Image (cartoon, rainbow, N blue to C red):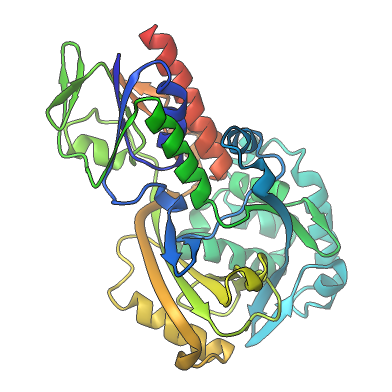
Amino acid sequence: MKVCILGGGLTGLSAAYALSPAHEVDLLEKQEVLGGCLSSYRIGSYSIESFYHHCFEGDTALLKLLKRCDLSGKLEWLTGSTGSYAGGVLYPMTTPFEILKYPYLSLTDTFRLAILTKKAGKMPVEDLDDIPAHTYVTEHLGQRVWESFFEPLLNSKFGDRKDEVSAAWLVSRIAIRSNRGLSGERLGYVRDGFQQLIDSIVRIVSSQGCRILPGTPLSTLEHYKGGWKVNGEPYDCVLSTLPLQELAAHGGPVIPPVPYQGAACMTLGIERDVCNGIYWVNMKDRAPYGAVVAHTNFVPASRYGEHIVYLASYFSGEPGTDIADRMRNDFCKRFGLSREEIHWERLAIDRYAGPLYVTGYRRLIPGYESNGLFVAGMFSRPNYPERSMEGSVRAGLEVADRILRRLT
C-alpha cells in the first residue's frame, strides 16, 4: 500500500519508522531540513538544536527509539539548575537553601510549594482541565506564590496568554520535573546533539524504501474514491502531522483545531557565561523573552569551544519584525554582555510551535482518524497535558499502529 506522511518532525519520522518496513511511504517536509522543532543548526564543527531540548527518565518510547537507532550509548544524564531574574538580580533557585533565600517567597510559601511538588505526581490532572492555573495557585498557595514563582514560568512558556492556561498543564509540568537532587534536575541529552536521532531515523527508513522529500510543501489535498491525492499524486492512506489549521486550507477535512502559539527562539554563541552557572533562568522582570536557557550550563561548554544561550519568546499572531534586535539588545544590556562578545546568532520562528493548553483543552483533542485521513502530532493525546519529544514519538507510533491495522 502507498502511504503519504505530511511533515518531517519527530511524529512524522516515528510513523515512517513504523510504516516503512511494510508499505511504500513518501514523507513530505516543506522545510529543507528535517526534524521540525527538533531540527538543528550546523555551527562550525558542531550541531545545536534550533529550539532547546532535553528529555526525562520516564520517556520510555523515546529511549526505546534511541536504542533502536544505536544512540543509547550517547545518551547522558546531566544536571539542570534553575534560577529567576527578578528586580534586576539573578537568583539561583535549585537547592532548597537557595529557594529559602529567595526574597520574593516566605517560609510558608516555600513549604506550600514543597507540598505541591510532592503531591503533583499523584494528582488526576484531568480533574484540573477546566481550572485556570492562576486560580488554582492563588487558591491553594496564595497570590505571592503565583506572582513570584509560577507567573514567570507561565510567562516564559505562554507569553501574554498565560492566564488562559489550565492547572492540568501546570501540575503535569511540576510532576514531570520533580526528578531532582540537591544539585538540580536530572535531564537527558544526546552527546553531540539530537540531530543524530533525526539522521539515524532518516537512514533507517530510507534503507527500507521510504522516500524523504524535503523542500516539498503541501499544496493540494484532494479526496477521491480510493483514498487521497497529495499534490495531485494518489495514495491509499495519508497521515498529516501538520497543525490542524492548515488541513482545510489545502482541501482536507475540517477538523476543529486546538489552539496553538508561536515561538521565537534566538540562539547565541557567546564568549563567556553570563548566567552564573544556571541552566534555566525564568524572567520575573518584563523582557522581550520569557526565559534564558544557558545550554552550556547544562552541557559542558568545552565541547563547543564557546558558550551557547537560548532566548525564548512565545507569541500569538506575529512576533514583530524587530524581535531579533529587541531580544539581543535587551539580553546584552541586562546581562552585561557586549556585542563584540557575541560570536554568532540565529533566530528560529515557528507560528505553530506548540499547543496552548487552555482550560477545556482535553475536550479539543482530536482522534487519530477523520474522514479517512489520519492526523497526529503535538495536538494528539500523548502530548497532553504537556508536549514533549516522548509525546511526539508516542503519537507517531500509535497512529502508525492504527494505519497498519487499517491497511492489513
